[in-house]
Picture 1 (cartoon, rainbow, N blue to C red):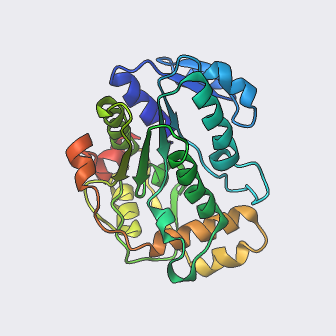
Picture 2 (cartoon, rainbow, N blue to C red):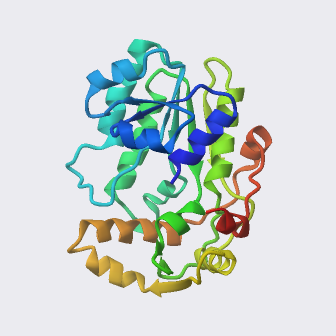
Length: 277
């Protein structure tokens, strides 16, 4: 969902891109313009060869919906392995996809172990001794199609007056590429990533549905309490209940002025995105 647009924009910007993946054969079929090598964050030995000759590493990691607190986490356990190898082979910069929504941790009594991991990842990167480029995005338009679209329905949990600044993955990819282009040696970068306009989640879904040309879609909304109850019996539903609560309640404000000045303004509207996917 997000690895592809970032990779494509890095290639378009003129970078020589090497993708580190566990499934090399499958990844090669998806990215013809990049070198693909094997690497597994749980196997530090595999990273040594994968990172040789690399100037910068961009991390597109996440906590899976069925992941448990006691499992191996790529964003902490894997990141520790990567930082160690990166230092050894001379990597000069780490780029990392974080989240603006993780700031909801501690608000309204909210606490979730997944957000602990995301905060810990930022700490590990900042204390690594390596220059870093950390990106804190708002909601991605891409999630409407790749995550919330189930058949002919866009699934929503609860209603919220919060108006996040939805951003398209392709615009985010352009900004990541620009950040690497302008990064000075030893410089740290932190950028809030937001799209061209704020809208509620239902406004975003309804505009996407209205513009989507390939089939007739409908927006289906379930009460959030149903997901909370189901979360007691399903790890995946538990994940969904927590992330949607944070999305529904985090009081996002516009903070991307510096990002737009340095990396360019996002150009893709919801309607344009709906016609591109």
